[in-house]
Length: 274
Image (tube, rainbow, N blue to C red; front, side, top):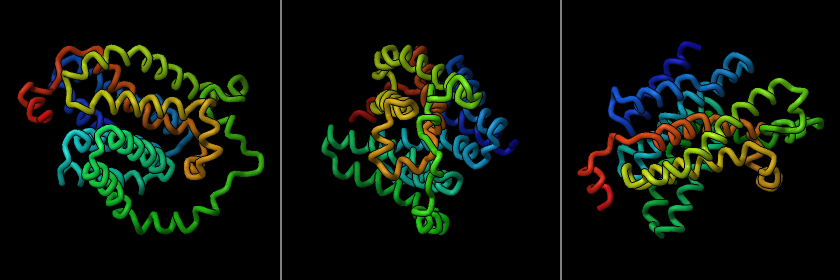
């Protein structure tokens, strides 16, 4: 438990340092928001899901590496994505499936916009390299993936935020409250965050807005058709597991939306844009 908490705090500090100058109010608020992660503590102390908690604690490192890579294609950034992907793969397969769809989905979205074949190949290659780093473990999992089946009584509607058993199941009540808090925060943060997109690196706000929105959507019942027709996504078992991503991205988006000073000097922005 202590190890997971320490990893989570270090990840919060690193991600906060990407956006804000150390010592500023925004810097401290983001660290506090990520360190006191309600979904992490729910999984840790209520569900006892140690493997998932470890993956959640690594998630800030993954998205920090992702932000760097999407803004600048480099071997260093690619290796960071590969290492964090591999660590999440070893820690928790459902979380790996979630970041697989989000990372590669956003890569595809960018490719549709800019037609940069080199970019999408490099990014997907880095993610694939991460999978290969965990190959000994993943190989065993993949060989037995077909045997992972839901019991006959399983109903996915019970595992969405505001699902069927909201009034009778305390688990659903808790994660629905967490989801609702992040959803309202997300709606309030979108517009001011978009106004600040010129103050940070080119893809920062877009990535936060799109991936947060997708993760929130996938956590609630309107996403049911996707779970029915995309076999791999069903392997995460509980749609509410998308909160592992939401709990990192939405607080980051919210603090960014209310900030006036960023750790992005004008010279750095100019170099990035050109």
